[in-house]
Image 1 (cartoon, rainbow, N blue to C red):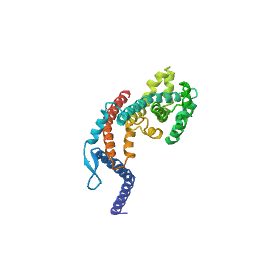
Image 2: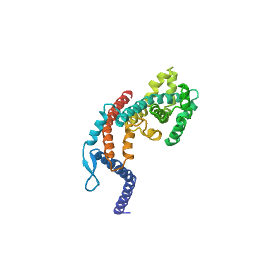
Image 3: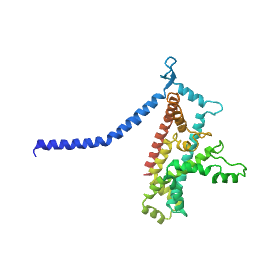
Image 4: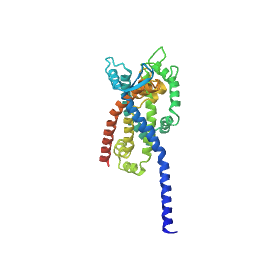
Length: 315
């Protein structure tokens, strides 16, 4: 084979490699452009637009406006604080605080499962089960369990010495707390798997060395376990922050936003899904989403920076 033929063969091999690489990245690239760049750009533009019906043609026309933000401000400044947006924001921070509280609870649960406490197999099953089936299935089971004739409602009725059945998912008094209880169970289950995976990767020799030095369980957890699984812990913290305005799944499945259980994420969903596309609710929802995205991004970046600093100090 002469030099020209060898060069041609090399070019063919290089071309095949390039085509192979292109075939791998082309679909993700198209997906990124269509469902991220175009969709988010469209939503950004919609946040500064408004629709009205043209009197002559009876067709909706779009024009640039800040009316959506005026409407949002008016909802926030209502004197009785009864607007759906205000309630949604309040509930969102309640769910966020609950998620932050769940992190140490999830970690402690995973740690004691890792240490194989009494009945740990039973608790592993309890916390692992929600990850096996669809959330729709569990929401249906949960609704059956908490209905007025269900065991939980009956127990609360007994403890309250009430003559009337307790309605947990159909009353303003109990609905939000019931949805949050469901979120706790599902949230701990997800965190339990991630923490469990991180704990299982800790070398046994490290734990045994600490035990030979005579450290107690608390010192082991703080000085040994947490530094070793800190990347997983920081990831969960960031996921909690990025999901600050994304809690809507449990609300959709259990109450549909009724009885003051709505959150920002569900409020946006309801204004997009439950109204005609020609209405101004699409633009209003885009404006709400943009405001809280602008609020969340700096929080996430600052948190990421702080977590990196903590990790650098540890190592």
